Image (tube, rainbow over the protein chains, first blue to last red):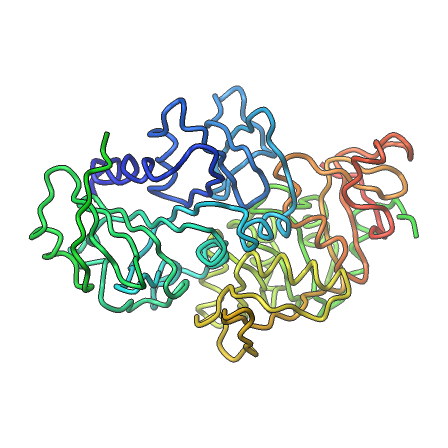
Length: 218
Length: 218
């Protein structure tokens, strides 16, 4: 996957976040989103290992070994941040107090099923907080490329990998388009700049409703 | 009860062959590394069940115990951070129980709070809920999760007082306060031990009645 595609996805997903929202960002493309949030974005970042109010990455001389995000990377805490234990953190998530979860996925189905934690036969033996986040967050945004590195579609009729949760994706952002789940079915609501309907159709095996809206890109 | 201050070597004498041992930390952050090293160097206990979010990293933290072949089973949300643990599972050398991170935290909290389990929507309809009792609550499919308890818990706190009251620093809190409540014997490693009365009472996260043994650590 090219860095350009990832950047494009992160930039578009950033536009889905509204001021004041509490947002949990997963590993990978979601972690690029802070770079695309304007100074007035006013989004509050939550990390499930126990911090509300995640700040920017630290300078090398500011590194604190007790301060990491869920990807185990160093972070800072903003003024007004709060720390809590893991049970409280997931109570916030399951209890619907986290507005948005943005996460990567291996596959999303036409009904919004998400598969993002296991590839049979591969050395992956971790689920982390993914299942809790997709079930608990009020809005779930999946950020992923439209195809795998081998060119296979990722927006599919039915997930072939083990599910993280059924009917959980509210919005899917790829480098080509934006899908929204409406009445249990994926709707194509936006083509990203330069992408065509034919191009999206060619890399999407899930059925979808074409419901193009005015572009969100400012 | 108040905690007894002792050495790491003496404290880990509480761990017997076949025991279930909880170990705090998110990765190595907030992990009781002095106690783990004592378990590695000064204990013959084997056939252990380890309850920890991760099984350390290769050759670090619990990764040392894994290399000694003393872990029979791991209960974790994310084995992937130690590829040697994943390899040991795939080779049939250790048994793995993978639990969504929020369920993992809540099941430990439940054990410490005398709760006989809880229904959660997380994992319903996925491989991780196979065989679990289900109930539809408020129209949503839930699965029954049972408490997770241990014979011994090893936790890390930045600061303790001589009674065993604990204060945690930043994201090094994570699972530590939960695990401190959920074991028959709780051993706390503290970065600093101060006189009783020197921790602000309102800042105590783990009250001393949960802590049995206190060890000066890193």
